[in-house]
Length: 355
Image (cartoon, rainbow, N blue to C red):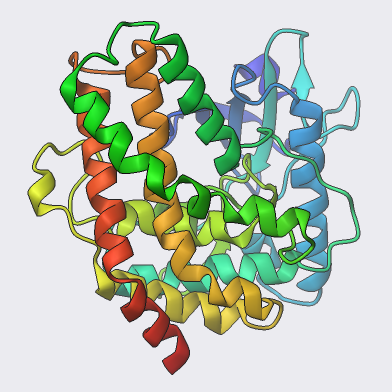
C-alpha cells in the first residue's frame, strides 16, 4: 500500500495506512503523513467501473469546473475534492494493468451522517441540487461510467427476457405471476423519461446518481461542505438524483423488510428534500423537469422492483442474497413503496406548486 501511495504526489512521509469508512464498492484507506495533509487511497472497483479512464475524466472535469466556480473561496479545498496526479503519468489514477488506484486529499474537520430525517433530507436536497447547478454549464463532454444505469426501458426489457427464459423455473409460482400482473400495467408510463428524451422534451444533465445522505460532508457547525463519492457522476436525467434519494430515504422500512403492510412513502422526507432541492436547482431546471419530479419519486421504487424481480426469476444471479426468497421479499417491498408513492402523487404535486 505504501508503494502504491508513493506513486502519487503526496507531501511528507507516510506514517500509517489504515482502513477508512464502510464503502461497499471500492477499498478505501486513510494515509497518515507527517506533512500538512492526510490522504485517501482508493482501489477502484474496475469490475463495476470498467472504463476507469472515463470515470476519472468525468471526475477531473467536474472537480476542475467546480473549483473554477469557487475561485477565491478561502475554504475551497474543503468544498471540492482534490485528486493527486500520478508522478509517472500525470493522470489522476495509477494502474498496474490489473488494479486501479487513486489518491485524494483527506478533508480536515469534516463529517458525514447516516441519519435520514427531515433536517438532513433538506440538507441533501440542497447539496445535490447545488451540485447539479454548478455543473449545469460544464463545457466538457462527460460519458456514462455505467451505461444505461437508470434506463427504465432497458430494465423493462431485461424483465421480459427473464420471464421468457424462465431460467430458474420460477414463473410457475403463483406469487410470481401475481407480481408480474401488478407491474406490467405501469410499464409504459414508467418508461416515459426515455421517450421524452428522444422527443427533445427532456434534457440530460450531469448528475451524481448516488444521492445518499452519507455522500455529503459537513463542517463542525453543520454547514454543507461538498458532495463526495463521485464514481457514478455522469449524464442522466435529474430524476436519477431526485428519485433515487427518495426511494431509500422516504421508505418507512428498509428495502428488504418483509413487513410490506407497513411500507409507506414518508411525505415529511419528500417535502424536506424537495424544498432543499428546488431552492438550489430551480435556477436551471425546466418546467418539464419540475413537473415530473413526482413521477421520479414513483419511478425509482418501480425500477428497483423490476430489477429485484428479474433477478429472482433469473435465479438470483446479480444481487447477493441471504436466504432463498430474499429478492422476492425485496420485490414485494419495492412494489408496496411504488404503490404508496403513486397514491401520494396529488400531494406531491400540490406541495411543489406551493413552492
